[in-house]
Length: 128
Image (cartoon, rainbow, N blue to C red):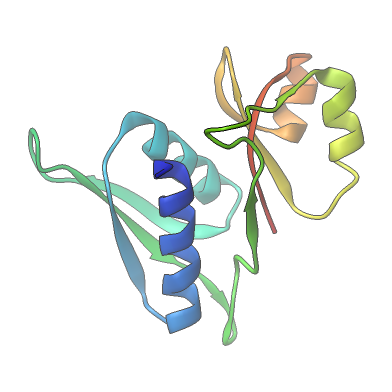
């Protein structure tokens, strides 16, 4: 199964259960996505913990009153079908609800940041 999708589902389930934080297994890719979500204020602090093989990421969840900050997320690229967006495609996608998360040659960026950099990439997910 897809590790990114698992991370997003764990965050959504933690939000729906009213938890203060969730713990997900560590990878550089998941850590970069978690830092982007922190930068965009969808989650609280993101901390890498553990040593050597037993690393994990602790993600603090944020709420607006009693409602979770992340109301939904949808995976765009899947293992069976990769979706790549150019700069023009990102402009069309940005009109939709939420934040587009892309994997670009300069790292994990939002749709707005990728458009400023004038580069496309693999569309990973949309968070709202």
